[in-house]
Image (cartoon, rainbow, N blue to C red; front, side):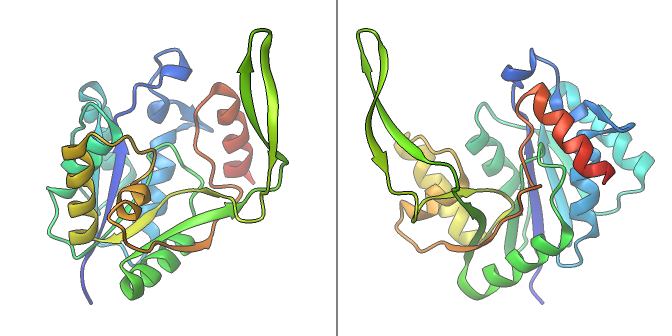
Length: 227
């Protein structure tokens, strides 16, 4: 069976958390990133984990991994100036045939979902989790007095994507290298593969697998992790 690495970009600025390192914020007594790494460690399909972090977070994360007895975390290295740079730095540190790229700030991911996505990526080379949008969607335009609705958007084909996003390593390396060379702005790794173009397959996401962005999100994931 070909080797799988999890790449965990965790070098974000936490700009919406008042500069606090959200990945080290305690939730029910354990730093947020501890839950993320424990879930990835528990996935039988993952062979190794590589974390890209802010320089000041490297030592605390290393200590956390030792204290938790995490065996699959093989490298914790300084991330780049953008998420794409951080992911590419992680990719350059592995020889795995497939990778699962997962946000460090998504602590409620399930090992089972990771396994399903890796299986699909082995079949198709690119697989990500996503949820269909349920709210009404409006496109707005800016006017002198503020914003106005320009049109209602059909949501039937719109999905919110999550991580882990799983790929053939050569495919995602080439796609991200092209993005970095062109200066294209992307918000997730799948967008780089789409731009090649190459088909990306969708599996059902999980409503609990939210990304912590604000202090309010911490309260939500705390509830999920307790329950």
